[in-house]
Amino acid sequence: MREKLLKEYAMAAAFAQEHRDDNPDRLLLSAARWPGFDMKIVASTIESRRRLITKAPFWASVPGLVFPKSISSQQCSSDLSSRHKALLAAAFKPDVIADLTGGIGVDCLAMAQICKSCHYNEMDFELACAAEYNYRKISENNNNVNVGNINVTNFEASPDSQDFMNWLKNLSPDLIYLDPARRDSRGNKVFLLEDCSPNIVALQDKLLCFSETVICKLSPMADISMVLSRLRNCALVQLVEYQGDCRELIVVQRRGYEGLCRIEAVNLELGDDAVLECGPDDARIAPAIVPESGIVAGNFIFEPSKSLMKTGCYGLMSRILDAGCVGRDSHCFILTGERLEQLGNLPLLRSGRLSRILETAPLSGRSLKEFSVKYPCAETIARNVRFSSEDLRSRLRCRPSDKIRIFALGADSARDKKILIAAEIF
Image (spheres, rainbow, N blue to C red):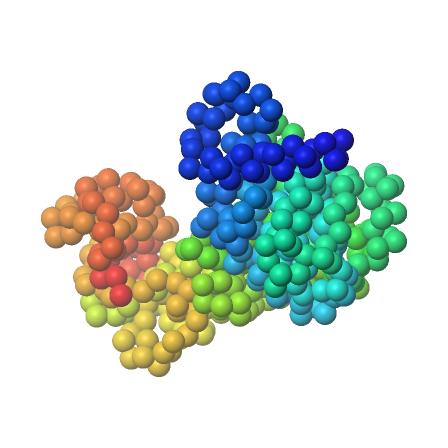
């Protein structure tokens, strides 16, 4: 079965390379013209390669790779985030790494560069065969990429699988990595850790018996407090951001660790160092509130990035910036020009967005009408008010802009409690 599948992959990969500019949907409809080829694999390979050009350009650059299931390329890590996780793993100096949920193999290939032996496991047999085939192709085309230390296996990663447990026990890896699938058998998204596959909650005790360190990639939508309540021995939670969005939540568990879990926000476009480092208790500290006299033209409004906001550590950000929030639930800070100069090239600032305040007004129908005339083009942000950012855009009847931002914010210190701010993008 395995050898037959590898031959099918070789044929499909060659056909996909020859027809890489064709429409994959049309190829599927015309499958009868090429009875010797599995056109589903061909179409998936063409579609995946196009997606990987921007997401994982190294993988897109290697000729002759095969991607039998397009959803695996949708859900795989980017080259940038896989390198980050490999650097994170390298800090623990592992000789042997086991990737329990290999997928198309992006993370495992990155991990293989920092250890002596890397073991790829994938529960889906077809994907495991594709990874074996692709690693061979990568080895043929890239002498500077270490692929020879990767071993491919196909076990059901489950507490009930004795074969899997025996394999892991005999392997005794220094570090285990896994990225549980966040969809059920029908393709629907799941949100509880227990519903992911494999079930990391049920597996964690055994994994920590076999390995000193477990690194798990979770949904960026996962609630940090929920994660910490279900996973034990958590030493680190990282919120990883790039291209303006929080992309991954990474949890590091260490055998026997009983200390406080460190929480970090990392912006990969600024490097691999944390732009904010905090503890779980920091999320309980309320930020300072800027007085109404500070929300004036000439001052600056700072919006933390999504990864920074997900930490919930607004009190810590307030102390670092020496700046107050407009409102506790508005998550926007006000800085003077003088303070901005003092902060200089602070990574925390570079991870968010700055705007220079042009004018402010109490949030009312009259001020909305006036702002709509003055600012026909603007980006809109609504927080801690009874309508959304899109609703604000509709009320202002403004077109998108990369020069002006209009905020509708709940302001704890303002007399009318709701404030409208027009700001120039800085």
